[in-house]
Image 1 (cartoon, protein in one colour):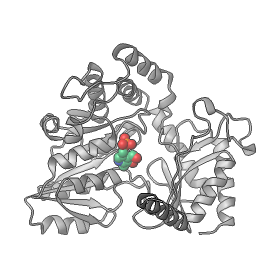
Image 2: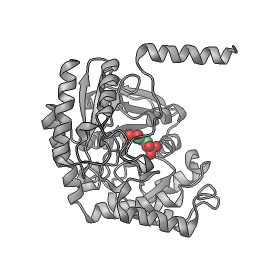
Image 3: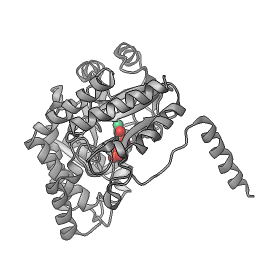
Length: 391
Ligand SMILES: Cc1ncc(COP(=O)(O)O)c(C=O)c1O
């Protein structure tokens, strides 16, 4: 056997031993596999109970959002065909950027092909050897990769520790500093103190980059955590977002001043050297943005379900849709997730290396359209399974 094959086999064995094997499996209840895996306990409902996806407001299947995607495909075709700076900018991108600016209260938006690409774009365009990047320890992998690519000095801050942030900002030797946080953290589901972080950045002449992947559509009646904190349009605060969670589509964006947008168009390599976002998700995300603005009751329904998950599973209510339950080991997390899947309940399973603190968790995600009775049935089952496998 060749050296590469040996290496891959060894690596697979290590993953197996550590209980960290990941897989791509077709999710039951999606597309033409509807109903598969519903399980006996799922009762009269079609398909499994989704407590795992990021479609927080159920907009990926909203008839108006789907119609917008279909119309855009008919009008523009299936792809953008080129980078946005060549011939890949279409009127649907312009419309989406307006809709996102309006939703978040920001002066300008620049749409990327994913949230990952948006995060790479902002930190590589603004970072560099003269920049200190101060990153919360729980920030998303895309921001960690972006930081590395940016060639900046990087310091990781204990989670949401503003005292450490203050000291590092005050004593820095670099000319520039960028602080990177998430408005709602994806693993823990808690929120950053944006008000105080922004005030510290203002005092110390630093830029605050807020990843609102989980904040847009959720906080501030759907307009995001930065908007809710009264920071929309603040010169020293920049937002990044994904269009693939509450907006139910695909793609990403950076939101801030027009000058920032212009700078990114000219310097962000993940924008320049990447094909523009396809017309269908662009139109879908624009339609979803307008629905969120017009129908804030959807966001209220989401928070009600999040509270119900927390109370019925006996965990502290996190501010966002994601409620986390600590589990004793990666092994237990995987086993319980699998048993729940067989029972027709889809939950997220987080374990090292995706979690910086080494704690494995079940992640239960609220959706605005979750049936309350079915949720209570699922919570009882989850609690029973975890009692059998204590943490
Ligand atoms: C906090 C955060 N930032 C960025 C991303 C990346 O977004 P996308 O999936 O659009 O690339 C994600 C997605 O999981 C995320 O949770």
